Length: 415
Image 1 (tube, rainbow, N blue to C red):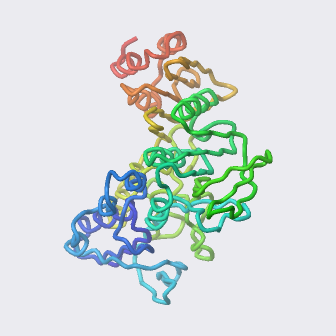
Image 2: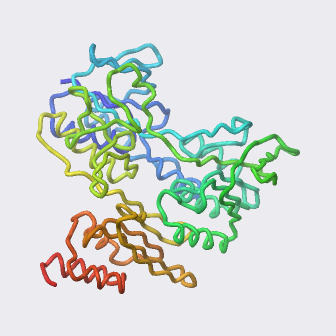
Image 3: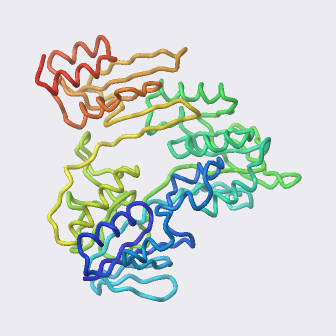
């Protein structure tokens, strides 16, 4: 049996290791298109902070880890997948045959159509090469402009502030982290960041980037104002890396739709991680849930099925946990308000504490929190378990901080 995995991030590595245990006699090939050993993109901000060196980003520390397991590492970019002939074609001209294929290619950064976005000094923060370029330019006191204040942008921002730069952030949405936070929560995070010395512009777009004087860059906003910087970082979001699948017959929507076993619409082809669209427990729809724990779990399930086991996932809950310059926030499930639902908010702007709960009938379906780090797992448990709250719904509408009591009571069947 020949197992081929495209993508050597966390999902690809876990899948390869799981396959080796579950199918000891098989050939396991792991393909990645970067020169470094398999590493975690989520570790790059810690590299930029100086907390770790490049080796600290590697997913496995032993130099011979993959060789010992009999996992063949192949460096190359996959240009096409032939599902009829069961092969993948590399940009080098080589091809690899497979009996079962896992697509774990993750996402790629979005490059907005901004004139000047390809100038020297304008970077994403997605690869080791990007991180090296940012480290070279982001000296203490240097001016840095970051385009985008979403989840990834806030993680990058943490590293930049730690480097002592003069940071300006431009976000096209009406608040920070607009795809994760309610308006009140997103603006609370903005206020926190401004208090830490970060200049934040919302409802703003960069329309042009030009080379300025002394090696600097000048970015123009849609308001007409200009921002000078030695470094521009584009953190405008990501999209699943599926372009190479054109003509393969593998169905692609936002990502690759998968069933509970991580199978695609093509026999013996599986998908996992940020490229996959799995079943969301809160909405009942397929969504891309681009967080590492989910990627790893999908990879494990996919690998076991590739090895002939019968394993199914019951789905996942969309969740995000973010530390923005020391302010911890989280969102679970359908954190946004629905017209036919009920909402309760607790707002303590002075203490940067916030809690929003979303209900459908007597079931908690979504939650957003800021500054609450204890027992938030109970929120996840209530939502993921679709636990009927009974009289506890009215109690939570009166005091949403009693969510832990509600979880314990209803889990035990008490009123």
